[in-house]
Image 1 (tube, rainbow, N blue to C red):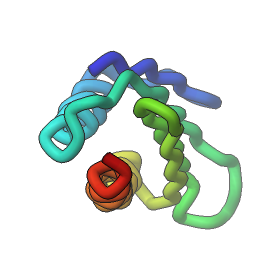
Image 2: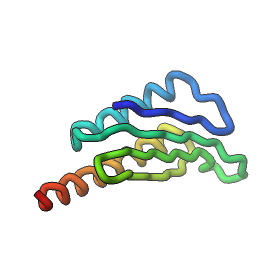
Image 3: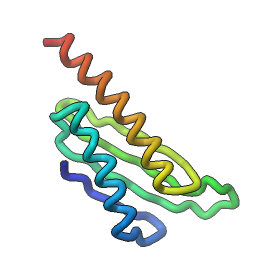
Length: 100
């Protein structure tokens, strides 16, 4: 799956991008018609410990599924976001089957 990464307010290292790519690629198991996606990684300057922000957008035929998560680490936010996307894709796939 083609995922474009955008890091805002910092420079993302290859290890983080590989981690995110592997996690997002696993979503193909739940819905095989994912066209592509965008992942935005941002560090917010605040006194709050949960200042890592991740937004993942997946494009599927007829829809775009978006999830935003905050956490202390990017890995945690990515894990949470991928879990929500997994549930959303399963739900979307079920709706598509009922329409056919």
